[in-house]
Image 1 (cartoon, rainbow, N blue to C red):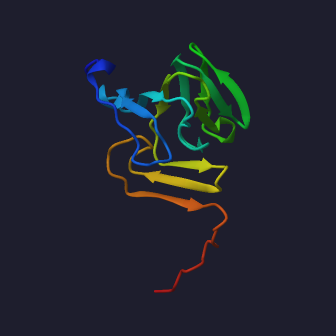
Image 2 (image 1 turned 30 degrees about the horizontal axis):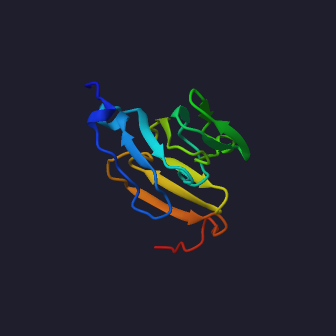
Length: 162
């Protein structure tokens, strides 16, 4: 493991029009295994990942610059430099960052890197499953997908006798 400098790492951006943030994966660059850390820049008027929580991974946020709002467990909390928030690996850790300020919001997100993990998206009624590599991990996954919560099936549905 070798220390890394964020200035030496490239920014990545999401491949969707629904999100406009930039990210540097510091934990991965420093060969982190059980702990991830990313530096984010969120432009004014933009939102981070959809409102969600993890069932296996705890996360935390630390604001470096700018101002915004953190939606945490259904409540709005102002963000400014020096703010720290922890997101437990359960429903009470549901979160989303919104930059409703006038300048770029710059923050760190640290997370455990456990798998398998299920990520729940309460606003859209769906969940994601990750096995083989945790969310944010780069290894190949043996199972990954997003599903509607209300499309539940019975345990024995579709089974046949062989």
